Picture (tube, rainbow, N blue to C red):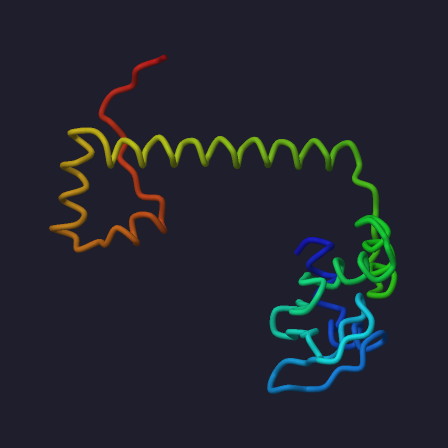
Length: 164
């Protein structure tokens, strides 16, 4: 779980917004007057606890999560909102070490490489004669649907290797 996800899990958006906005329960959600534009006559501000988000359906027509709410309310940038909400949630922030940065970069490079491999093998399945035979087999004999093939990133590996 990322630090951001941990903060979101620990802070109740209804409680946070209620410090600024008088909210009224409407079903499983909450509504009130938007704190970002005064002189409104209709409550157009909604808080959705299930998704941890808020939305103004009125003049400002904005929305977001707890971070966006604090940024808009206080005029902060993301790092300021992150520090405040982390402190409030009791989540320790730390600057990543060089080793952690290197590991994250390696992980990202691997993710990109794997996505490229999926794209290559998917292309082979859908656009080559041998791939078409495999695709027909998967759909007709095995009963797989295109949605299943897509969801699991099913592809076709050709029976040869050719360096580029």
